[in-house]
View 1 (cartoon, one colour):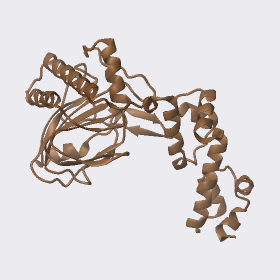
View 2 (cartoon, rainbow, N blue to C red):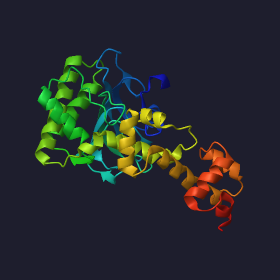
View 3 (cartoon, rainbow, N blue to C red):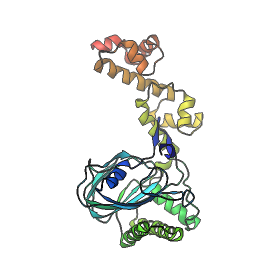
View 4 (cartoon, rainbow, N blue to C red):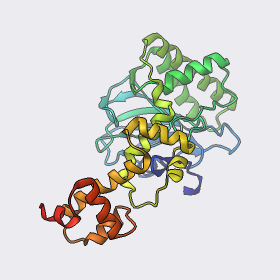
Length: 331
C-alpha cells in the first residue's frame, strides 16, 4: 500500500501523502462509523482503478463520542474540502488553529500541512473529498480531471480561488452543505454510479466557487509562485545541512534552473545560495558547540555539512571572528 502513496519532492525533503491510518483503525475497532470510497492509500471501499482516479477519497465519519485518536500533522496530495455537520472538531494549519463548528467548511491546498484533533478527534460528523490536481510543487499548474464540466474560464477562476488564498475555514452556505449531504448519501450506496458521483462533485465545486466569489476574498498569487517554492526550501534547509548541497542540487529540489534559483535566493536572503548555506551551517554549528558539549569539534563540523574540521574552523572564524573552541568556551 505504501508504494501507491504519491510523493512531493521539495523544500529540502520528501513528503508522502497521508494514509489516514487512525481513521481506518477507529472504524475497524467500532469507534466510528466510516463511509468512504477511495483510491490508493486512503481508507474505505476501494474504487476500481479506472473509475475517477483523480478522486482520492470521498466520504464521512460519524463519531458519537470523544475519540482516543486524531489526525496529526499531515499532507494530502490533492485539494481537500471538508464540512463539519455535527459536533465540534479542533483543526489547524501552520497559520491558525480553530475549533470547527457545525456548518464550517475547510479548504486545504495540495500538500498543505494541517491537523485534525488536538490531539484527539471529538464527537463529530465530518464529510470530505480529496481531488488530485497533479500538483507536486507549489508553482505547478493545476490539472483538473476531464469529467469536470466547468468551462475553461470557470476552471481558471476556481483554481485561482482555491490556490491563491490562505483562509482555510469558511461558513458554508446552504448550497455547499446540501452538496456534502448528497455526497454522503451516494457514498453509502453499495455500488455508487459514476454518473451520479460526477454530477455531485461538479455540483459541489460549482457551489464552492460561487460561494467564494460572493465573499470577496483577498487573493495572494505569491502562494503558487516560484519564489514561494524557494522560500519553502530555504526555510527547511537548516534541517538538512549534512546533505552535500550544490547550487545545482538545490535548484533541482525547487524545480528551477540554476540562474532562476540564484535570483530568487538573492531576493529572499540577500545572499547567494552558497553564502546562505554556509551561514546556516555556521549558525547550527555555533549552537551545537554549546548545547552538545560531548561532541568533538570534528563531529560538529561533519554533522553540519562541512567536509573537514580544518575547513570548518577557517569558515567559522571568518564569519564569527572566533575559533570553534573559543565559541564553545564562551571566550
